[in-house]
Amino acid sequence: MIASLAGQGYEIKRCCRILDVAPSGYFSWRRRTPSPAALRREWLRGLISQIHAASRGVDGYRRIRAELLLGRQIVVSRKLVHKLMAEGRLKRPPDPQAAQEPRQRRDL
Image 1 (cartoon, rainbow, N blue to C red):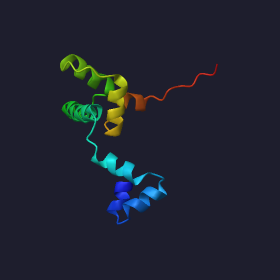
Image 2 (cartoon, rainbow, N blue to C red; image 1 turned 45 degrees about the horizontal axis):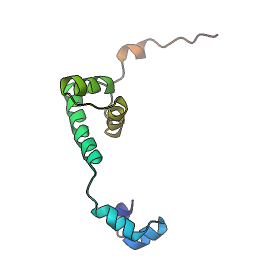
Image 3 (cartoon, helix red, strand yellow; image 1 turned 90 degrees about the vertical axis):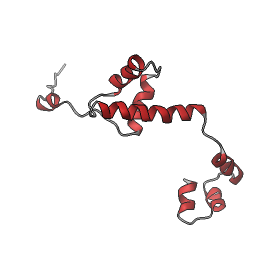
């Protein structure tokens, strides 16, 4: 947020004061290198997008996780795959058969 405001011409120290952030904390955060977990997530994002593109956008998070686990021996949770796909806006297309037949409601 602060970096985007600074890119628009606002002073960084003023942005920090408005957002109640210590300027020293902001500058140390900006200099910090990415953590190993952040690097792994970025690497997984690339793999997931490759697998999704190779399946022509048909595979959902379950099949992509299976490809990572069984095909490439990469252990990853289904929640992480789902989250990374949602962040990358990678979705499985809707099922055409489900759109043709509406579900009937049953009164209990």
